[in-house]
Image 1: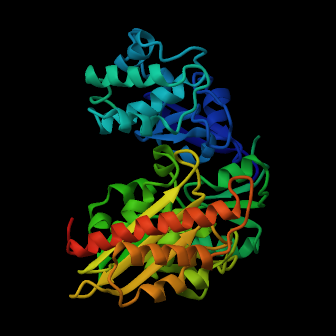
Image 2: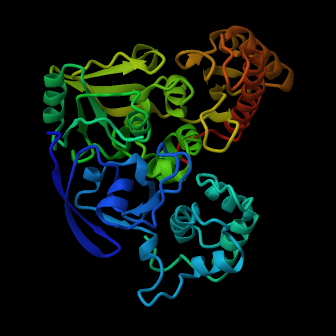
Length: 164
Length: 296
């Protein structure tokens, strides 16, 4: 039973079938088996939030799930956030306009977390934004511009339709 | 940091899961949400021969209240408990405590049964189970049994769960009219495990005196503990500020915290007193305002 298991899942609307070892982390499956390297791997123990993806609409740490556990389920990664023509999602545009990123390593995880958060709470207070961001670490920005980006995206009513 | 190799099983019945656990004779780990187990695997602190994944077993994800008891299926996610109107109405202490678990991304995935079975002494749910005198529902080859918190939590990360048994549900008693409860914790950073956490539940009589009180603390011993001395002191007394302060001081004296990287024993003692005082004050106020049962 250490042998590869065949799994199928939908990622960003596209169907994939792959054979994976049971110990394959979902994060490594997304990056290495599917080639979707926008999902980043930081701490690999659930602290930094860089690997956050949406699983059936819920933000989860992909380093704390096995690929075999995603069999039959639907995922969304950072590659599925912008429009197919490349137009940025309003949340991504807000990050750019508010300088909510510098090196960008943590950004995909922040975006995926905030997509769920704004989908559920389209008009958050600053305290709610700070609490929602607490599960993602950024070592560059000092968070102030990220909070501003979430505020702008909320004001633009981003995240509410079509998320989750 | 990748998990070591293991065999993987995803049974679709409880009986099949128990059979698998029995066949591995202690060398298999149950995985549900995986929010505690996957870090242990990634760090290779745990090297089980097999994982038994219970996420595909139907009927373990439910929240229901009847007969004065709130019962929650083992695979129910923390996030579902946090959002549940049934939990808010029948067990507000649980609703309050569950918000302190990790971050929302962790609560999306982590499960009630997993948190109880993992038995971290600073985790919120074991403390609530201890305070409310709830019970763990355990299914094994011989059928179903239940265990109270003191029967279940043996020591650090260790429970009385047999190697061929599975936690299938957790039960929390509904407190009823004239009662109040509160949960307080302090962690260094949002989402961290608590340095100290306190759950308080109490009932007031018609004269406003304490009919009974239960105080449970986490982060101060190898398992969640009750503060029996303070409970006894408070019984029959009116919960005024001076009395609650005295009870809080008693708690600091009757616990046995240890110093570690995160806090000294002295600091934990002081924190336990402060958090106990706050939890008692809030619980007493809520009880005086009419109690908990039925306000959805």
